[in-house]
Image 1 (cartoon, rainbow, N blue to C red):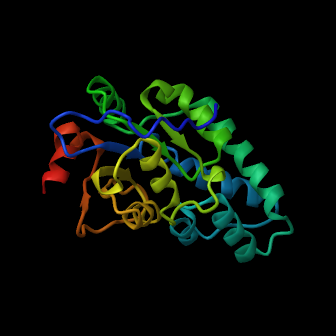
Image 2 (image 1 turned 90 degrees about the horizontal axis):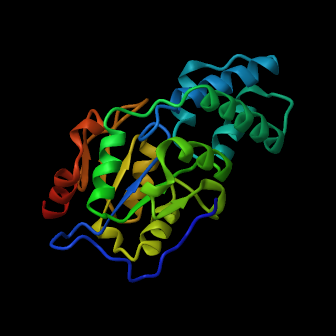
Length: 231
């Protein structure tokens, strides 16, 4: 599956200032942030290294090049970035093939956005091969556009993925609601000018201007997202 960019005239919801909803994947829609850490621990154990649990907050939410590069440097492991990336992706795929739990409220939110024909994009730092595997469970029909971390020159925390998604949906970034679970993703969305709903998964996130923090997607529905624009 490849990312699809609709024509700029994509229809928005009538009577609403909300033009599009942009959703992160790992830790936001699917409960997989722990999977990544478990795979990293397992791979480095095979290389003869033990990961410090405090590093988990450093590697969460960002591009694989950053997290893998950090772990190589921190451990001194004798492996290059390309080889480690392959091992991590393979380990992650093995786990999601066995189980892929959705976050509470994710299925309901996606169904509601689809029912009201709200332009929706999946924006992830994960690679395309991972996104396409996850979409078999999430349902590709819920997204007009998907953006993978290995398809943009700069992924999160840079704004590029969210700017690309907004442009692809014909939406003004300032009229987009982004749902994220990590500080890295929040930084990317805010740099793009979007309103952010943060649902922290691993590390705490504090409220700020144009940033609302909730404890679960079960608190988020279309009325809630439209209310962000009105506020």
